[in-house]
Amino acid sequence: MANVDKTDVGSTSTSLDLIKLNDDEADDEVFTDGLDEDLLGVLECPVCMEYMVPPISLCESGHNICDRCKPQLPVCPTCRKPFLANTRNIALESLADGVDYPCRNEGCFEIYPLHIIAQHEVVCPHRPYECPMAQGSHCVWKGPLSLMNKHVMEVHRRYVRLGAESTSVLNDVSKTPGYSLVIFAFEQVFLQRSRLHDGKFYSAVQYIGPKENASKYRYEFPLSTGNEHQKLIVGHLVHSSSEDLQSVNK
Ligand SMILES: [Zn+2]
Ligand SMILES: [Zn+2]
Ligand SMILES: [Zn+2]
Ligand SMILES: [Zn+2]
Image (cartoon, rainbow, N blue to C red; front, side, top):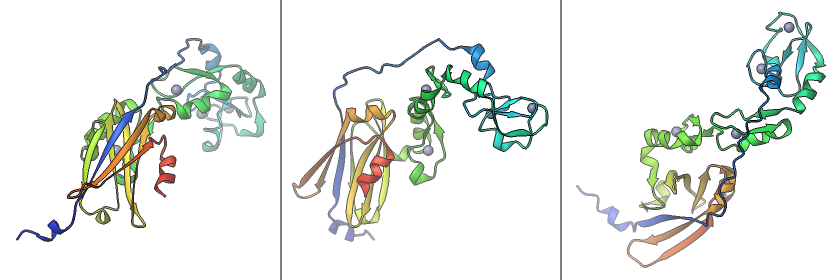
């Protein structure tokens, strides 16, 4: 019949309040149309069609090859002759030094000189993101932030909380050693990761998106027990990356 034991377990409820801090300056995105397509065309790798960055290698006949494609090819794909072992196209490399490269991420129109472009692509708002549920569910989805909402709603709907305030009831924390929830609030994506470690319950919120935006949000984490007026509120700034989160969860 009914399981009466359950009434003996005092249920603890935990809620999460996300707070947006004052929004001072709008994103100053750099849109430039100063792209020198003719010059960039010379730098196009014949195999992957991406713009080459140094080191740029040569085959015996003088064809160029990018550093990513060269190790995967036994001979030059244009003339079938071998690549020169330690010879680089210095002239083309110095030309690359003076060229602005377009960001390779779809939807991004920013251009940067060679020494900056790689750094930009890592923090670019249009870079592909991993699925926020990747860790728990082994989901391999990767895509721009603009499509993350759709993916998460389609595939991980049961782990989604909508809005800045959410409450979950923890019946027995020891039986749920870890869980993640994706929170859509303020038109942004957050990940709340909670877990039990050494008898302690940890929970932290991560902002999914450009790192500099994370500090605009903080979260409060009130814990209350069902029958008594016990309430504990923990507040913290939202974390910007999963690395931050791991150090909190330790
Ligand atoms: Zn290539
Ligand atoms: Zn060749
Ligand atoms: Zn970009
Ligand atoms: Zn996924």
